[in-house]
Image (cartoon, rainbow, N blue to C red; front, side, top):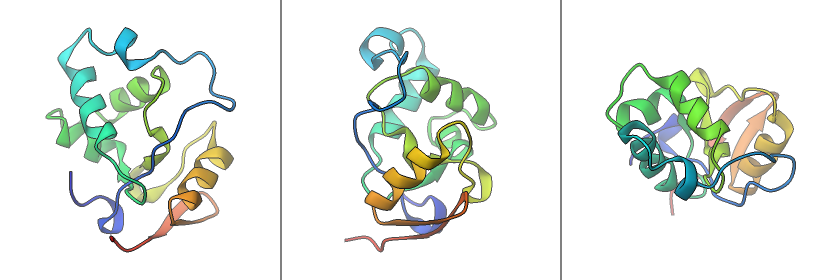
Length: 122
């Protein structure tokens, strides 16, 4: 996947640390094509990549399904969820601080609750 906010993409890491109750993709995401497509897009994201929920939906072949992307991320474990942000680069609750920290670890500049700059591609 190319593009994304400011031409970048979001990071990957285990979802431990306050995100209990998520199901592993192998258990929860093989039931329908939409979820499988979202998982494929999100798992392709590399450190420094940041995309919006809408961009994930469109890349997965389901334009207009941004909220449904959020549902997949909210109920799945092992996906680099922090690399997916709201329209305009806005970080959504309830894990704002954790997401901002993980994005910073990926080289993404976050000010307040908004992605402002992304580390240039390698």
